[in-house]
Length: 282
Image (cartoon, rainbow, N blue to C red; front, side, top):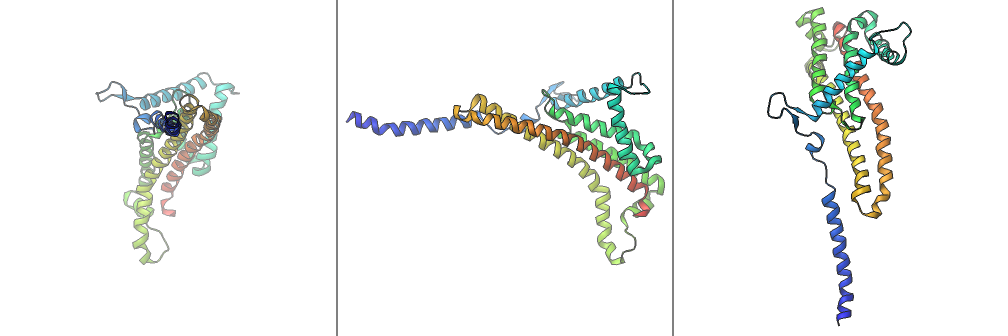
């Protein structure tokens, strides 16, 4: 009887082992929380000047941007080399492909400092998202994208108001000419929301959402690699190369997104300024 009872208990014991294994996996691998992505303050906590890790990354990348530009142009040569050549290539790209292309040479020269500053600020702040040890773009939180969008909003409205005056600028921006009068009831609210509300909103959300999504994807890929290698059952280790390759591949894709988001933000800045300058050609 004892042998037969032992044989009957074998399946039950195996079931318990499997249940324990699944429970252990669930305990070791948990979905990341918001504090995993955005840790609490690490300096000056409890004061108006407290800094979290994301703010420190932002300050670091700003210092890197300033340092790179100072180093590149500390003693400029007529025939640029090395870092000066790289920096000048970036500046020429912004001037020719964004400022001159959208605003024309005269206006492009006038607004080049603003647009170039926005382009390189977004580019460098985004780049920290793929730097080991930093691993996040400070544009993945709404603060910096909102500040940049507010600057663009103030500039293009100032340009329009300065040229046309407040009321004529607003009227030219929201009234579509050569349409039946009855359609103005529909078009004026749409144009007002599109011009004065949606532009800063879309600038902010587009940049933040793209960088946050990229950060989350990289966290998931590399967290999965760590889990498969060190915490998962032996048979699951075979999946670690696939998650690692996916993470590396997405890192290359994220490099493209980093540049595109800087380009799109700077391009739309130029477009909005151009629209304000030609509001009566609506």
